[in-house]
Image (cartoon, rainbow, N blue to C red; front, side, top):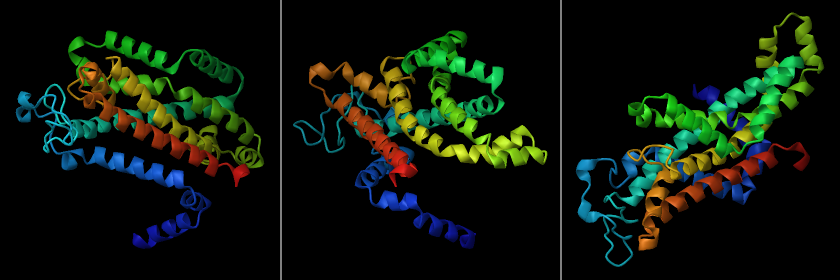
Length: 308
């Protein structure tokens, strides 16, 4: 097993992508920040000082405690507490888990749907291409957040009220995912239109390989470069969209708050002097989105042969 993995690491260390990464300070810093937040979110049950969702451990007397370095602060709550006595640091770590889960899952859903439709549209052409692209054009005429709000509202209207909180995360993933497939579809369609007329695709047709096998084995690997760049940048957009929906009160339930929900809760106390309730989740959200965006910008430049 090790003998098989070692050559892969050796090839990665000698690749142009790794060389570009080593010589990009912004990429290194953004990767470190992203990795730190992701590890903190994934390992939240291990590294969080408190469990903010364990009602038995909450004490209302600890509510609205300022950060530890402020006057009347407590060393038990490094970043302070909210109106229910929940530790802000622990809430941010657990909230980042929800934000990352929704963001990654919705990006994967958008990517699978968009790449599939883009491959079909570019390879089939004709009426199929026209129908898919007209649907994409119609969706592009509406803001992403408006499409997500519409889908989320329709889904909540169709589901029983007692299932809203249980299925809120899945509805949110579907709403954000279905609103972001167009970019993948249009990019993959353009690349497929170029690839389908090349000699290796025509040779595959001549030896009797079916359309599905041609798309999966030959065309798909050659169009994945731009898709990875779009997915990286779309991850930041998906996290911001989730935070926006949660801030508006139509995202995840308060019992499992994301960073957007924590900001919304703290916004009610912002003008009362309890700034830490919303500021620290906001800082975490900005740091996560900014680092992912910088990684996406670096990846776009690194995969562009004209910039080498």
